[in-house]
Amino acid sequence: MSDRALRLLRRDSRLAELAAFPFNFDLDRADHGEEVRLASGGPLEPIAGDDTGGTYFVCADGSVLYADSEGAAGIIGDSVDAALEVLIGLPGWHDLLGLSPADGEERILAAVAETEEEMREYFGIDAERAELRAALGLSGRTPVELVGMLHTALLRTEPDFLLLNAEEGGAYRLLDPHPRPPLWETVLEPGRADLALLRDGTAWAEVAADPARRALALRAAQFDRRDTDLPLLRHLLRHEAAMTDELRLAAVLVGLYGLAEDLPLLYEVRERTYDTWCGLGSMPEPGADGAELRKWARGLDESLFGADPTDEPPVTWRGLAREQGLDELARVAQIRELDEIDLRLYRKAPEPFDVHELHSLVYEFEALGDTFQALRAQRLYVSRLSTASERASALLALSRLERQAGQLPAAIRTLARLRDTLLRSGDRTVEHWRGTQLGGFVVEEHQEVARAASADPALAEGVREVSEAAAEILAELSEAARRGISEPPVPPAR
Image (tube, rainbow, N blue to C red; front, side, top):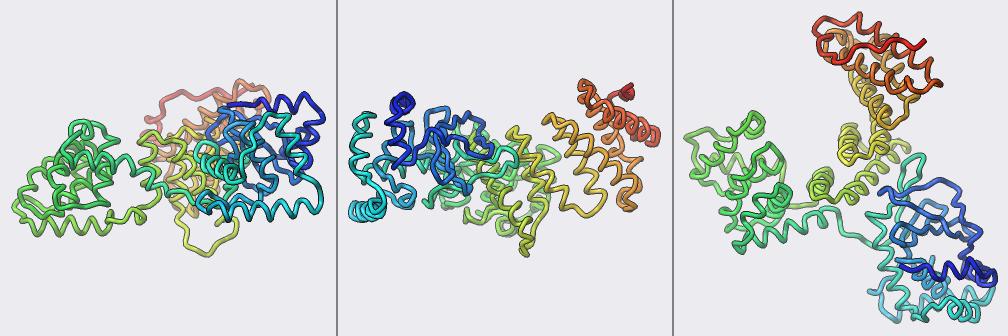
C-alpha cells in the first residue's frame, strides 16, 4: 500500500494543478455531495474528485474506490499510487472500463489511441503526463499493462467494497460491465473440492464432522451425480442430525438408488427428532420395496432439488454463503436482491411479486447482524401487507428493529400505527388478538420501547404515551395472554 504520490500532490501546488488538469484528479473536489458508506462497514476517506461529480475514496486497506455522480462505483487501484498510475497513464479511463486483457494488445492500443486523440483536440496530455509521472515517481507502464491493472482492481469491488447511499441504504451499481461468477459457483467451489476428496476415499471423517463442509459436499453431489456415490452419501446422511434442507437432500440422493436395504438407515434418520419425523414424514413405511423408495425420492427431487444449480432459489446460495462464513458475499447478494425488489415496487412492475421474499430478507439481514438493511426490508414488507393480522405482526417486528437500531422516535410512531391496526382497523382478522399470544407481545414491546426511550428527556411525551397504552392494553388482555408477559409495566413518565 502506498500513498507517496498523494503526499507529494498535497505539498506541491504545481503538481496538484497538473493532476487536476488534464488528469481530472482534483484535491479540491473531494466532497461527494451525498453521504455514502461501505456495506462492509469499513472506513472511507474522500481524497479528490473530478469535474463530473465523481469522487475518489481511500479504503481501510489503501484501495481507491471511485464513485461517479450517476450511482456507480468501483475499485480502480490497490493504492493511491496505483490509481494515479491508471489515471495519468490512461487519462480517458472512463471510456476504457469495458476493456480487459482478453481483448488483446491490438484492440487495447487502438481504443486508448482513439480516446487520447480526441482529448488532444482540446488540450495537451503528453508533456503533462511525462512531467507528472517523473515528479511523482510513477512508472511508465504501457497502456496494455495499465488496462490489466484497472481490470484486476475493478473485479475486487465486490464483495468487500460495495458502496451504499448512507441514508437510504441502496447500493451503487458496478462501475464496469465485466462478468462475475454467479453466487452459486463461488459458494459451491469448496463443496466440489470436498466431494472430490470423498470420491478419492480421503477426508471422510473431516467432511462429515463439519456441518458447513458436509452441506456443501451434499450440494456438490446434487449437481454432479454419479452411480458410485452411494457409500459416501450414506456416510454423510448418517451425520445429518437436525432437520435441514441438506438432510432431506441426503435422504433423497440415497433414495434415488432405489435400494430397499437403505430403508432402515432412512427410518433411523427420520426418527431422530420430531422435526426430522415431520420433514421426512412422506417417506415409504416399513415393508416398502425399492421401487416405492425411488418413486418417493424422485418426487421430492423434482419438486425441491433437481440437478441444475441455476434452478435453486437465490436464498439457498445466500444461506450457504453465510454458513461458510462468506458474510460479505451474502450481504452483497441480499442488498442487490432488496434493491431489485425496491425498484420493481417503485416502478409498479406488472410481474408477480411474492411479498414473503421481503420477509426472508429481513431474517437474512438479521442473521448477519445488519439491522439497517433488515429495517429497510421490513418497512417495505409492512407496506405490502393486506390484512390487519399480517400488518400487526409486521409492525411489532418493525418496532423491535427500530428499537434495536436506536431509532426510538420511529419505534414510538410504529407502535401508534400498531395500536391503530389492532383497535381501529375494523378488520376481523384481529378481532381476537386480546386473547392470544400476540396481545402479550404487544404489551412487552410497548414496555421495551418505554424503557429504552426513558433515558431521553426529549422523548418524555412519547414514553408517557407508550406506557399508558401498555397499561390499557394489559388491562384488556385475557388471563392466558397476561401470563406470557415477562416484565412488569413501566410507569408513565411524569
